[in-house]
Image (tube, rainbow, N blue to C red; front, top):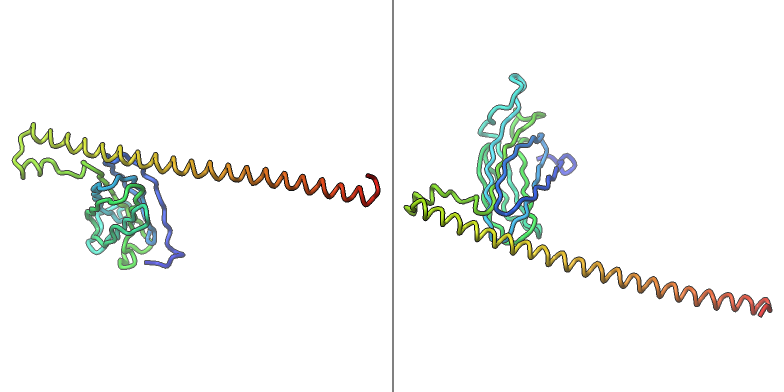
Length: 221
């Protein structure tokens, strides 16, 4: 990869409910790094699927990338700890489980310096991120556990309820943090107001004593 001065990180805030799934595509240049922010409850599985397309100047369209062109995926938790850091191919799937509730940063960049064909070019990345119970492959689960349609539906409902509980716990966690921040801010404002009042009183006393000394020196009092 290029040096830190050449690296341009574009951070897109993608705030979704914990049981949501979404797909998107974006373009990155040779030295670009694209990051997304996901608010995720604790103990929640996240699956990301991606595929890349390389811009072809002759056909003036995006074509499937060559196998040698890969993507590096890095995931950090709200504390900045690296949860996942791995090199993948031109098409792949990454998985991780959150252990800390909050904003997780998911960053992707290409191994473009290894590919002469990509030099000065443009890469389109199709990304689909699934969070929570959407990560479950229910047809596969039904076939493996030999579940009836009713049993499978009950399993889906149980997973949804579990994910809703996680989301509610996360919202309570966010409310608690917001309350603590508000109380801390209010306390700072209160102490600052008290400090200002004390400074004004001391300044007034000093001015009065100074004026009294001035008048006494001038024999006006």
